Image (cartoon, rainbow, N blue to C red):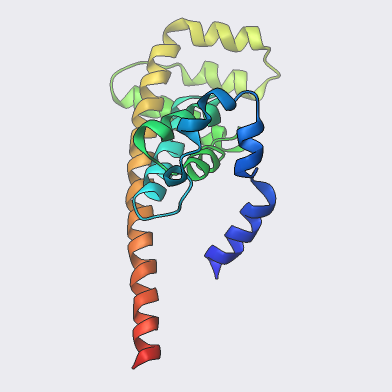
Length: 181
C-alpha cells in the first residue's frame, strides 16, 4: 500500500527517463546515470541509496543532491532514493546537525566555541561573520564532527532500510502463504 502510494507520487513529481536523457547537463553522462539498475527499487540498491543520501546530506552542506546522484552511479545505489534522502538535510534539520557535529568534535578533543556558534545562530549574522567563524579553528573540528555524524547516521539508515526491506518481504510472503493455505 505504502509502496504503491509512493510510486504514484514519484511518477507525478520525478522527471521521466526521457526528460533526463534530453537534459543538456545529463546528456554527456546519460549512458552511466540512466542505467536501469540504478533506478530499480531492490533490496541492495535502496539501502545503499539511503545510506549514501544521508551521508552526503550531512557531510556536504551544499549541492549534495548532484554529488549523491553521481556517487550512486559508482556504488550502484538507487539514484532517486539517494537524491531524495539528501533532502533530510535542510535548514530545519541543520539546527540539530551542526550542534551535534560540534559536540562530537568537542568529545573527540577538538575545541569548537559553542558560545560563538550560538551567538551567530541567534543573531542576524552576515555571511562574512559565518565565514570568519568557519575559517577559525572551528572548520576542521566541524568537518570532523560532520564526517563522524554522517557515518553514524548513514550506518543506521542502511541497517534500518535493510531490516525494513527484509521485514516487508517476509510479511508479503506470509500473506501470500496464508492466501494459498
